Length: 462
Ligand code: GLU
Image 1: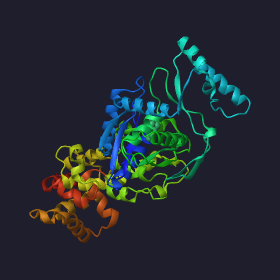
Image 2: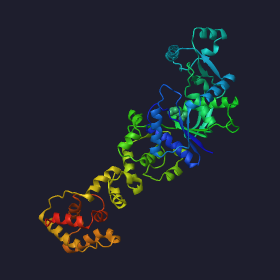
Image 3: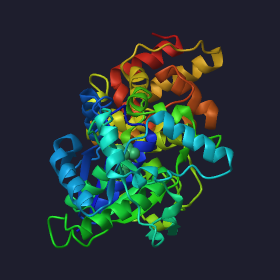
Image 4: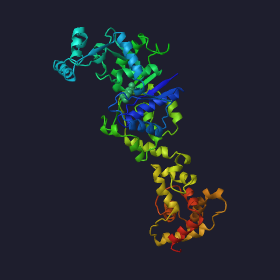
């Protein structure tokens, strides 16, 4: 049973990078008929905010990324306490007393000698008496997880292929602060075990965290921490996607602040965002696919490349137009101008880049419109058009779509005009515009008496 999770820290709004991770995890779960968990990583009480939790939920809902279960780290502190006790009992956690400044000095010295800034495990060498002295001074310890240096850490990454880390090249991570609060590293692994997460898909900025977390998983399994038999053995499958960069190929500040509010304000449809983010950075073509089920079915980690995925706002605009052209009336009805019906939507839809523009085109139907000044020759042609207009059968709505064709055929015969000379003055007279939605669809919407009046006015005979 596939279980994935999206684990945002509620310290800000979701940006496109987060949305992409959420989407991919949602797709993995939906594709397999599995479970998608929204996990709020709120162990950092100082930076986590309830309004951000609400905004994360609202954004995911707007995007249609429904979750089957919500979990919160702040509600699971007893489990972290239990995991801590289990790891400590197994000798995998040790207290440290260095101040931030001391650690900083150590790092600087290492760097100045050309050495990697790896924690030197000085705290491991403290005697009981040393520790007692520190505590007597009133220094509370912070806690590190003791990495096992015996063997390389390896996993077959769903995107990056075989990954290998020498644990000796990593610092033992601090997992708990001196005030007792938790850092990200251990609670995340504890949650993945307890929640039966089978696939962890996240950004490549987490690759080295995965190396550490694999050891935390294994140590917790060995300590008999997992609640169930199956959880006691299982390591999730890991995959790390290349980061999203701006069009110019750099990690851009702009992307970090680009989220659902900005998209909504610009009239970008959730389906356009989904269509773009589902395939960006993969070998599959980015197309305006409005059918999420189809996108989900074709989602495949094997198609992901290792190069950063370029997020281009122009691509998004292009996709948005493509998506808008496919949206059914029911999907947009609430956002359309008063009185605009399914036929109206169908008529204007191909001319829109954003749904909100429907109102401008609808104004051509409801009027008033501003006609151009016609040359005498065109006025004569339009006078002829008012006569041809009287031959149209407005009694049978099922032939309304044919009215425009009939009108132009009659006029073509009677005036000898064709092409632009035939169509443009008619369009201008009926809509006041040189271009726009299909006249075959617009004419019945404008309606018999209004269309007649517009033609007569343009011909100067009204
Ligand atoms: N809260 C972490 C983050 O936002 C979650 C990482 C993970 O998926 O484990 O980066």
